[in-house]
Length: 432
Image 1 (cartoon, rainbow, N blue to C red):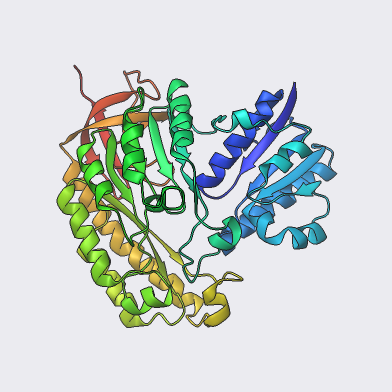
Image 2: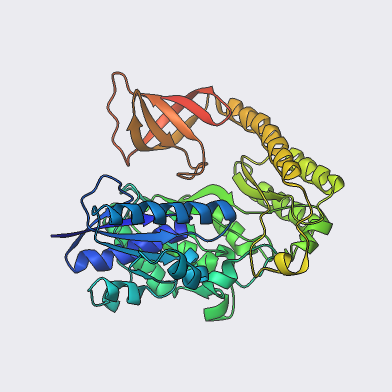
């Protein structure tokens, strides 16, 4: 059997693309392995990220490592796809000609054809999972219409295009039939879902339909844009027991001056009002956000507002990154990157130090509680699990001593939380 190694970089949306591509390849007789540097696969496909500087550098380094393997005779064919090659295909062809071909982020039929496979439309909802078998990402839309000042995604992925609801549900049903218990709903903006197809936002209806799928026990919502957040989504999240009381909602900043400069389409007052509405509807909800520091003209006063925002809201999960200029974006063309790099790094560190204390206190407050935990893996002396308040790969974990017990990956257990650290919890399975 032919073997192919598919390497995926960047976000979960890229992972879903790779899994759809891999299903086409598997149906044509390929044996697909994921992200392996120990395989004897003679064909390699690298799905790249082109979002920010560090991600682009990781993609380039991965390509160069594969080129070295090709030059050494360990692999025979090398293809590069995804966001980096969508933006820089011409430059990449000139600089790294050893790659057999480059393809963008939206032309997978051409990739399949280059690999000697006829693209089959009837496999459009098929996936070959690269995650553990009990959870999967479910991409409900492509692209974005917001055009935030710093963001290259609309340039790479194009405008927002929702996946028809019937197709999303069909894909979710197939995932459930194959043993998936947790769906992580993703898009560049999940709350925009349906507006282009149906003339109105229909995320709430989609969530209700996903809740009715047998076998699905958790549904988790990521990447919700704050502007125009639909009230019916809040109502469905509060009412449906299958929907995790968890929301990933990137606010990026809170200073009105910075929000305006970023073209974020909402104000400080509206952000606080939305958070209040969410907390009132679901007091136990875990909120995850992403913040950016060092955007052009960010002052110390702007940064102090941001720190106060973190103190006020006390996010359960928080990530911070420093602004980096991206070609073609509003901020790159119209603004000057005038915050020194050392100031950006200091602000990242200050916010994360502040969040460390908040996260520790949140975790201490959970000690003594019994929570429903999904087991992801075993690592050394511990089983690794998550509660509904934690998403895989990006959030904290619950460590359960493995001595004397046997737990099954992909199964749920009642776990008593016994100890807390800043970004991990410890627990013991409750005996029935």
